[in-house]
Image (cartoon, rainbow, N blue to C red; front, side, top):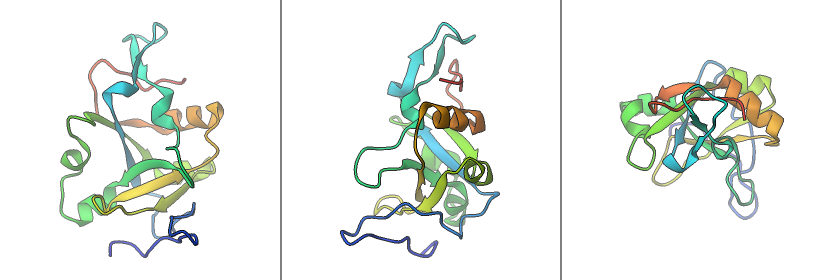
Length: 150
């Protein structure tokens, strides 16, 4: 086990929580898929990451899926290779301390095929999504695409 187990509800689903073993200085990585790139004449390159990259997934207790860089490294894997493939050619990163400072919960939510998976939980209003944009920098850059306020 990489971190202590997350809390679960009666149905066995991970409940939103702030995992104490995830440290302020830790970094989470959010994959960016090609469908999350939109044209925007207001940005210099003409393309930016869409709001879809800064929203929660659907479903009960849905949060925003991310990977914890420290867990990837703990498994002696290359974080750049771990988060990048044809479906996810780019990624952004955010520091946990910054997320918590804007009232985002950062919790461990391991998946069978991804033991480094975590979730971000918040009320994903447009304002909150722009705060996430402000905290984001490229981890694996998609050339010609900007991280820009929505």
